[in-house]
Image (cartoon, rainbow, N blue to C red; front, side):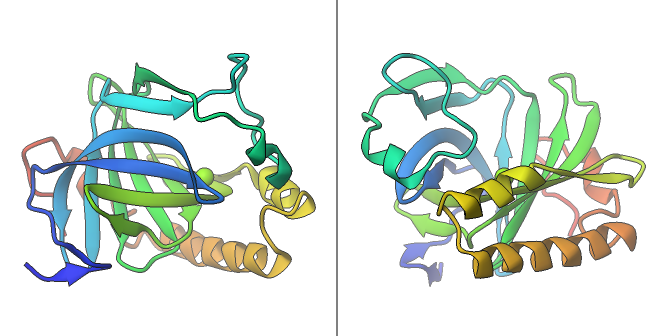
Amino acid sequence: MTGRNGTARWAPGTVIAYRSMAMGRLMAEVEVTVVRDDPDVLALYRPYLTPLRRLVPSNGASLPRVLRPDAFAALPDRYESERWPYGHALLLTPVGAEYSVYLNWSPGWTFERWYVNFERPLVRVDGGVEVTDEFLDLIVHPDGEWEWKDEDELDEAVAVGRLDAVRADRVRATARRVVGDVEARRWPFDGSWAEWRPGQAPDS
Ligand code: MG
């Protein structure tokens, strides 16, 4: 077992916390199961209805999509527990990459899409990982057609000071590279992992 970021590698089957962070603050935490923790990729399974805890404003309203930095100070540490309602996912993070690729299935295991989340390089902490989202997302349909999601959020994040313009350009450059992978049907968009089920090691 060799360490990375000060933590040992996790054995397949280990349940860890996947912590979504924003400006260093915990926004949501969901239980995931380690499928593969290799030198090249971390693969995590997020089951349908897995426990989820998320920050909610004290008035119970949902948070704005892009919260201004000064609004963070006003947020109380108030979390609600629920269960992940959106089907199964395999979360693939190439080591050191500034994105993850989620394979999304319905609760009944119909493959629905790849979802590319652009984010800061994943941070390994005791008992889990911390991920800071960088707003832009890319949706890739099973037939290989793709579309941006939340391009406007990336612009808004720059406008309100959540992300500097240099960082936003880096996100866009990463996104263009991933689109190249999608269009060439390179890993992991080659379809071979879409048949994965819990208890199997995914294809490499
Ligand atoms: Mg995102």
